[in-house]
Image 1 (spheres, rainbow, N blue to C red):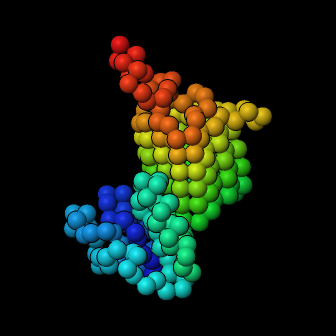
Image 2: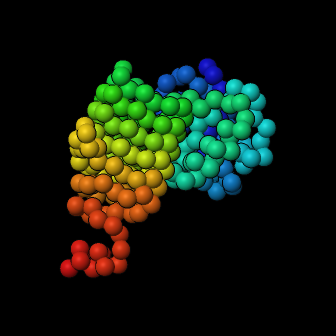
Image 3: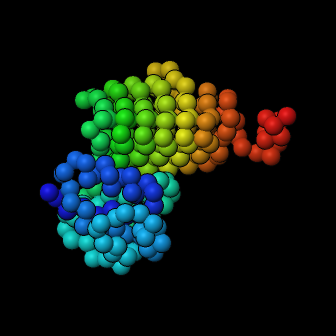
Length: 220
């Protein structure tokens, strides 16, 4: 088995640990985080190794960034790219990835995730349990799908987007894809029916920008 390090010690990291161990492909050599508070909460067998920026990684070390926060994951990834290390794609055997799909390094594809056909996905993507990405979608770097996200066809999701649990993203058109702008946040349970501007948070069905005025309207 190949050695692998995990950055992050939260509940998501504990889930990713289970996925990795189930494949028998990698041996987990240790965990990194800013402190060991979360590490002590979970049943990790590999040692806690401290803060990743204090560690001397070796050439071709395998590293998985098990951090759901897209901005934090991007910062960690950008720092580690200064070193000659590897970011393997972690997939669970219950997931399906079409042969025509392209996924860049560092992705975590959790159990029961489906990525159908002609999909392009950037670096350090995370798709949590029971999510799917349908045909002809383009997804940027450091995008996070929480559990149960349903992304239908002809959707463009730009970098650093966080999509909450149970979100439904309506299908776009081949000549006019539905777009979610860079750094946007889609609140859990939202139904996205039209383009979302960069950097904003949207909520509800249909999804609208999260402002005090819109909250008052929705709450009646």
